[in-house]
Length: 504
Image 1 (cartoon, helix red, strand yellow):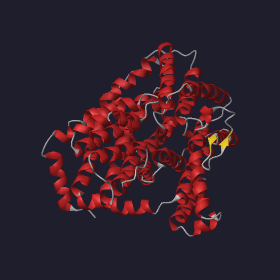
Image 2 (tube, rainbow, N blue to C red; image 1 turned 90 degrees about the horizontal axis):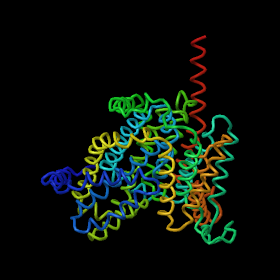
Image 3 (cartoon, rainbow, N blue to C red; image 1 turned 45 degrees about the vertical axis):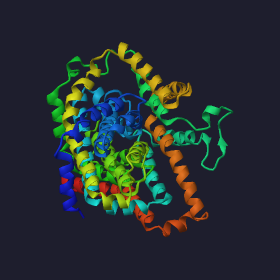
Image 4 (tube, rainbow, N blue to C red; image 1 turned 30 degrees about the vertical axis):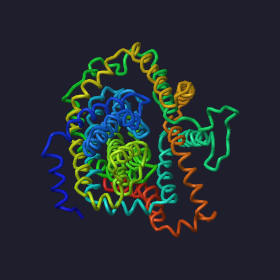
């Protein structure tokens, strides 16, 4: 329940002075820029600018850092659409249909779809946080490794749907990614397949690998072309067409709301968050669509599902931080550092004793979402100009940026070498019609799945099935997942048969 007195005090904290909002627009711009540059993570931007907040009061610092968080969540989707470069792991699914739309000259519409879905998803996520922060905190406390295994498994099921031409190729690509995820030190301290190379002890760095297999391999494949969009008439950056994409978003209310809810719930799970949320949302959108064959070829629903879940997971990730004092990921870990500097400890006592401050942070983030809609529209006119740059200039500059991003992530030559190796791997896979996204999903989620499985086996004394029956939430999630994965296609087939019978 909402404390109306604390809510009125929160409005007073936010709107009696302009000072809390002075850093919001700079924060959104920083997030958009960092999110759209390959290799520069949102958490990196927040960490770089954390010292700036030391001279601010607590609320102003929170609004500035969360503005970077909000802007970065959308910025990663912009490059995923325009150049097939997910700015972060949370934007992987955005590229599945966003980039094909851009290659078809529909980059304006795709950017509009992504912006509207991001704004609405983030808004839904924070509204749910405002209304349900105490119940959500109770829910997070009940989540253990078995529940996380089910959620990650749900994300892995997307592997089987990523290649419409050959299921076997999709599965092989996914299992190859899972194999790659096992390189390095295991959860139990065993060194595996490092071939004596100390750089592999920590495993394959996921972000440089993702940059190489998505971005660099696509740039290699584009050699011989003049522009990203071949038709000169379609290269224009049209504000009207961007707004048309924004309007088209509302033609898919089911996809939009489902993606927002999936993102908010999964985003609240520490250690899982948006990386899984956008994949689960995309997979459910494809499974329930009347035209699943269009996914991966420029389906608007794919962009909406991925971006709404990606952005709504931001509100979910704030749940554990505010209610429990637990960071759900790297970005919220930086926020926790800001909490510590201002002598604030998140948790039940924080919500109980400073409810007005908690509400002001959430309301401030809702205001940021509104500002993102305005600033995002303005920035799209600039960011969208990439389709008008000749590939002779774009390819070498982006490849150099990819190598620099890989080095920035690892701090060693291993980063650029990983980018180069996975660029070659991605080029070979694309040439032979293997889905590179399936490999990235396997690489991204494989180690996460291994860690949670090991913890589950340890807690259950080697009896995971019995332990599953003792965990109502995990069992409920598992049953729901099976119903969705099996029941939805069956219902869809029955519906199609009824339609055919009516037509005949």
